[in-house]
Length: 266
Image (spheres, rainbow, N blue to C red):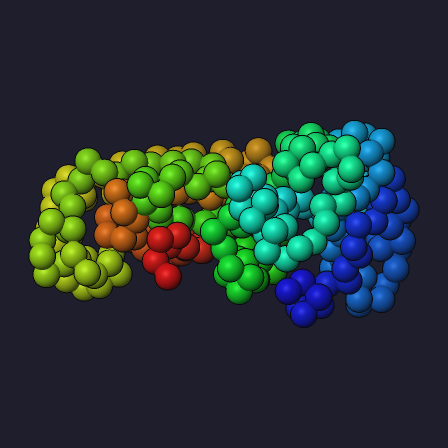
């Protein structure tokens, strides 16, 4: 995805060479070096992974804008992917099984996880959905401002692991119990009209909006480049979708880089 939009991409560069690459990029005037993406995974030199926080801190922020995007997935999903693709885990061996290799991988990459500006949980994503997220969250991100994503979800399916702030709106009136609204979602006019008419929904929206208006600038001032605000109801189809869309409209008018994703709506 990044190559398609003009990034110069390097696969699994030894982490110790990031400083050398940065020096080259910051001095080179060729257009292809204006945007560079480097992937680092468990195949890297273990000592370099352990020293990654120091290596990353040594990169000159005055010359480059640097971000860490971490792609994650739960253990069961990783097991399934390796089984389906019949690919060998880079850390597995006769003495180290697949599950143990995955756990070891998490240990090796923990110094990078702790520094990530954005974590994307790919467990339930298709390849095309992941490409869309990279395109919308990374490729379109303005380095001069924080990117805000509102994400609706259903608590019955679990809280998104990549959420920075979570709001629970299951206490609000549920359109699911109205037969003619059950098969719709929070973007349909009939559902919007119903929720607009509920005083508790208006109060919840006002409280979330006021909270974010006060605290989003503080997050941005703390050098946050991305923030994911998850809003959950029971199934992730009505109340959470409605509120995410309404908040997106409000903050988009303030010229904030806003995106929305409805996790349970395909």
